[in-house]
Length: 188
Image (cartoon, rainbow, N blue to C red; front, top):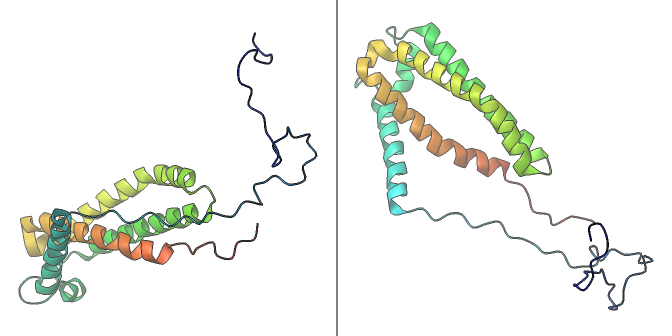
């Protein structure tokens, strides 16, 4: 019974539009003659009020940190002009964060350019994941060493708060700029 035609069961056959068995002389595959279905993008996930409140809390606390700095001047002015900051760990930490952003952008753009987005995204993000993680931890440690003379033990929660606010804001900025255009001008 193996390898042969099934007997006594239903046999699935490909039929032409007329309903008769196809003889193989059809010039059209029927896929091109069907009207194209335009799929609308999936609606965004509805967030609960707790998630929205948490995100607003992270952003508000990071704005507070940036605005008040060390109570005498804001964080940006401190990073540029304060002599208490250890400069070499700060610069290496900034380079690490910049390199992390470049890796993220490269893997995102590399995945967007391919037709099979889901497979390419899995491969590129999984191969870059250990490097991004290690580089992020090293950058966090370098920032902690650089800013420890100003905030001492509060440096770690301060950096974590800034990191969380960055992780909330950055994806919405990047996804908005990388969103693909519709297939309105496709010619198949």
